[in-house]
Image (cartoon, rainbow, N blue to C red; front, side, top):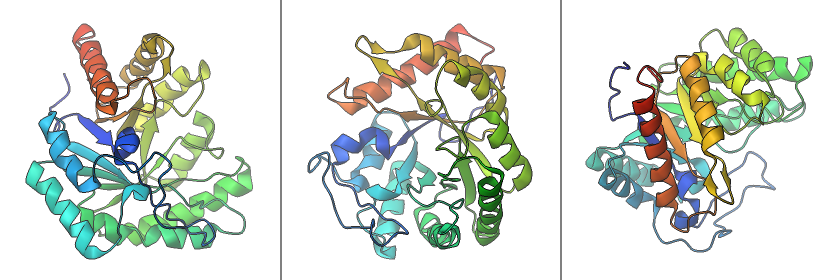
Length: 286
C-alpha cells in the first residue's frame, strides 16, 4: 500500500474551475500577447482567494494555481493568497506557468528569463513546485538541446528557493516517451516530471504513460468525456498505466468539459472514480 501523503493524495488545478473563476490574466513574455483582465468564460462567480476554503470544505487539501488566474502579481496579494491557503489547511502544490518556450530558436533566452522571474512569486505562494512548458517547437535535435540548456539554467535559478521546477509531457517538443526520457536524462534529476494523462492521444498514450509515469512526481489526472459522460474505459486504462509504472504521487483532478454545469460535480466524480479504482485494485496505485 502507498504511504499516506501529507495533505492527502488529491489536488485540484484552478483550470478545473475556470468557468467558475471567469476572468483570466494572460501574462506572457511576449509583450504583444500579455494583457490585462479578460473574461472569455464570463465574469465568474468566485474569486481565486476563496478557492482554498471551498477545496477544504470538499475534503481536498492541495491546490495548483494557473498563472493566468492570478489577478495580481503584487507581493501583498500573493502573500494574502498564501495565507488563505494556510488558514484552510490547503497546500500549494504547484504554480503552473502557462506561457513561455525555452526551446524557441529566437525567444528561448527571453522566455527562460521570464520564467525565472516567477520563482519568487512561487515562493510567496508557498508553492512546492513550478510547472513550466518545456517547449512548443517540433522535436528536432536542435530544439531539444536548446530547451535542455535553458531548463538547466532555470533549475540553477531555482536552487535554494525551495521551489522545484517540473515539466510536463505537453506540446510538440515532447510527443512521445523517447523525447521525454531524453530530456529528463539530460536534466539529471534537477527538473521533475508532472505526467499528464490527457495530453497524448490514444491508443499509443497508454504504453507511453506506463513508461514515463515511473519518473513522475506529480500527475494531472485529466479524464475525457463523451456524450454519455466520463469515458470510464479510457480513464481506467490511464490509471492502469500509472499502476504499471508504480506511480505513488498525488493526483491533480483536471476537469475540462462542459458536461456538468457545476464544475465541482466533474471534479468530485473524478476523485470518486480514482478512489473506486484503488479499492477495486488493492495493489494498484501503490
